[in-house]
Length: 541
Figure 1 (cartoon, rainbow, N blue to C red):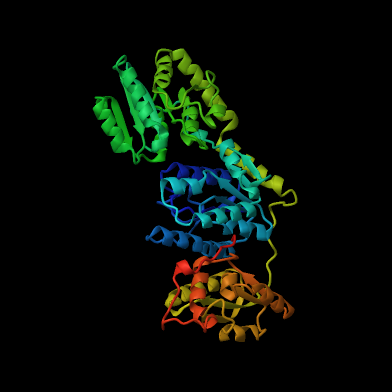
Figure 2 (figure 1 turned 30 degrees about the horizontal axis):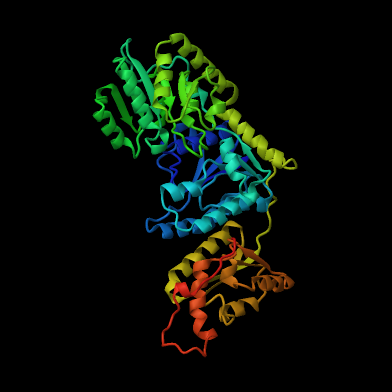
């Protein structure tokens, strides 16, 4: 059986939770399993237990990111790349690496490329822009460098929409490797005879919405349109499924309009309950506002269509191509409550139109948007990038090699980091099957060549590979020369996390050696230059 490592290093995605992104992850894993793959999941956040049909998935939980200041969490997320690399080395080999792109993760795609196996990167959103706009992004420069790094390493990139593909093509590293493959739906969850969870009286007409109660989902437009119709049709009911930051504002708006008695807010519900709730609707809506960059591939719309619901959606982004106006749904101007109300009135007053649009919507999903079809397209894309790869051969096991580890920090205050660094390098060496002959831990500046323990290590040759975390741990500007000299001794240099510049540590190194390189400057005892006096240009990682 072929093995695939599915990577979800995003701390905001509980893989077994109820978010749309969580459902998406599980859907891809489920389809990979159906196609005969043995899936091993590497995830930062699980969010619960796997459902029964995913119990055979082997789960490797990555270290959770500790709470703290945003800058500290960003650094911890970046450092977690080493934990992921160790895990991949330990539990591999794999035939395929599949990763859902996250803000600080790059090592999975580099691991795949280093082994010559397919590496597929799935990109669902412009995460850098979202983090900066809706949350907090301290080190945007580093996030951009990581994005370029992972895009460069990926063999194939899947975007969920043409708009997302256009965004990715702004990166030179993405040219020629991005394919827009939209989301899908599991048709088995939507049998045609499904009974409603919330049945209504015969005269009641239910308009429904599913999704996070977020500013970009157009709920104020929906409420205004419903208000206009409710005056004319008092038997109307509005069913809103989901929860989120806009819940209280939504309730306030409904109360002000006197509509609370006509509206059912379910709050957050388990995903397995969604089909029955959709069966409780007569019409479904996706009333997105006029967003400048609409890159979504909304899962809810695919589920609306699978449930044979007539849909009114905003004429925007991918929805323009998914929904053919007047054929399998109705489109209206984004953010236009009057246009939305008119479209809903047409459906309310015409059962024939509702039936024809609903049947056509289901047929569109059956033909083009089952998850099995989507995953097949993704795998075909990967193989087109690897025509020489049969996907059924594991690397031949090699005899264990001997290795030495060199770990370093700049100052005694970082001793705990030194121990952690050495421990992770030992885990990495063990995962790769090395026999460790020496572990060297040193405190000293990376800009000072008087590091006795490193000098002693380089003068011995009783190991085949020297393992360091990054170039900066060995020597900031001379690691290339050290690698060349080691090669002449028959020793390989293995850099686990090949970042070019680690800016904060380089500043610490400059502080540590400042008195040594400036002996003629008159300074008070204990002088340490401030960060503002250490202006350093960082190189791309």
